[in-house]
Image (cartoon, helix red, strand yellow):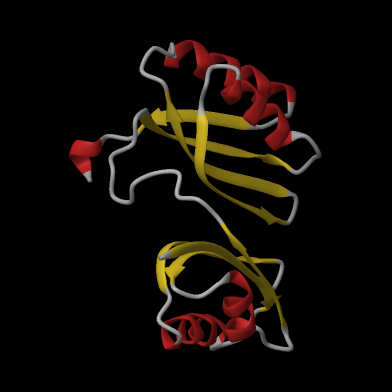
Amino acid sequence: MGLSAVTVLGVDRPGVIAAVTGSLAGCGANIQDSTMTLLGGHVAMMLLVSGDLSPEDLLRRVSAPDLVVTASAVDARRHFGSPPTGRGHVLTVHGPDRPGILAAISAELAGVGGHITGMSSRLTGRLYVLIADVELPAEVDVAGLAARLAAVGAGLDSEITLRRVETHML
């Protein structure tokens, strides 16, 4: 059974997700992982799909005139449902929009071996808001990292916070 990455981009409209996922289900493909968001009035979807169809077959099944669809064979990099290896944190950013915000933050995280596992950002007027799920290695000095991120934020006129995900509260 093969594994394929399918991406979909198109103008948002009611039923677009139903059409894509219905096409996949109709050909026996199983969605193992997915994410979807709206970006400036466009729907953007990424799906990790297993099944007996080649990426070319998936592309033919999912294609529509108003969608840009890609499909590529990929190798599984993790076992689904396995626990994360790092410590989970949530990073938030609030401040004026400007180039380089994400570049500065992600460089600071990468410097300590941090891994962004999910992220969403929105621009509301001039206010830029980012929320990211981050895994940090157990040996990271989280207080020191939070202080460095706060300094980066101050240089960008933004507030950056980093807090541990409390799994016992979930």
